[in-house]
Image 1 (cartoon, one colour):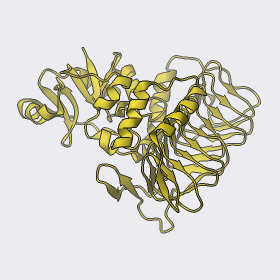
Image 2: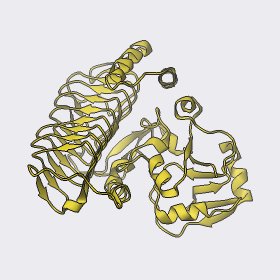
Image 3: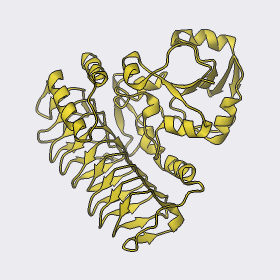
Image 4: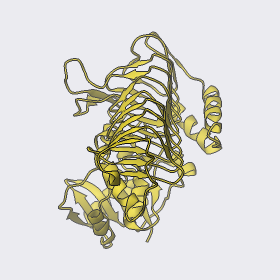
Length: 388
C-alpha cells in the first residue's frame, strides 16, 4: 500500500516554516510528523507537497492508495482506523479531512471525490498542526508520546553520578554516545530524552519535558524550561522555555527564547531576546502568510517564529509574536518589525533586499560547517521563495 502525507491548506498556513519543507517534515516533540507516522503505521510513508519542493523531498504525484493530512498527529487508534479505510472512504473530523482512500492526483479533484465518497466521522479527539504556534503548544504532549514509543523495551545509557536528578530515573533516556555531566535534570513535569552523540554540558539546568536530538549540544549553565525540543546538530545556551528548534540552528549564548519555533540553519546572536507576553497580557496577534495580515493566535504567550537560513545580530530584541521569513538578516537597534519578510536585510530603521547570490554564499558556508552540501535543489527552493 502506498501512503503519503499531503500538505493541503497546511502548507500556506504554516509558512514561513513550510516555505522550505513539506508539512510532514515539521518537528513536534522528538520526531518529525513523517517519522511518527512511519512508526505508528509500520510502513514507509511519502509526502505530497508543493512542486518546487519535490526535487529535494521526493514528493509523490499521481493517485495514491491512501492519503493522510500531513498536520495530523498520530495515535495508535488513528493509525488502525486509517489503515482500515476502504476505497472511496474519507475519514473526517468536524468538516476537515483526516485521511482519504484513494488520494486523488490533484487537489482540484478533491470536491468531486468528496461528493462521491462515503464520509466517516472520527469519534475521538485529534490534534492537528495548523499554525506555527501549534508546534510549541502541542510539544509537551508529543514529547511524552514520542518518548514512550522510542524507548519502549529499550535500556538507557546510565546517568553519570555527577548529575543531580529530581524525579524518576526511568523518565530519563540517554542514547548511545551522548554525554551528560554535572547537570540538574528535573523530570517531575515531563521526560528528558538525550539523542545519540548529543551533549549536555556541566551546569545546565533542564526541566522536562525536554528533547535533545542527535548530535545537538546544550552549553554550560543553560536554563531550559519544558516543554522544549532542540533539533539535531543544534547548539543552545542561555534561557529557553517551551520552544522548538527544528534542527541545525544555533542559539549559542545568553538571551531568552520563549514560546517560539526556529527553523533550520538559523543563528541567534549573543543576547538575542524574545518577548513572549504583551504588557497588557492580551491575546497575541501573529502575521499570517495566508491572510496577509496579523491574525489572532488564541495564545497569551507567543514569541518568535523564524524561517530557515535567517539570522539575528547581537542584542537583537524581537517583539511578542514576531514572524521572520527565510534568509533574513536582522540587525540594528530597537525592535524590528513584527513581520520581517524573507530576504530582508536590516532592522528597525530600514530594510533592504538581501541579494539571492549572497544568500546562496551564506547558506553554502553555513551548511558546509555541518558537512552538508548546499545542492541545486536547495538553490532552486530559495530562488522560488525570493521570487514570491
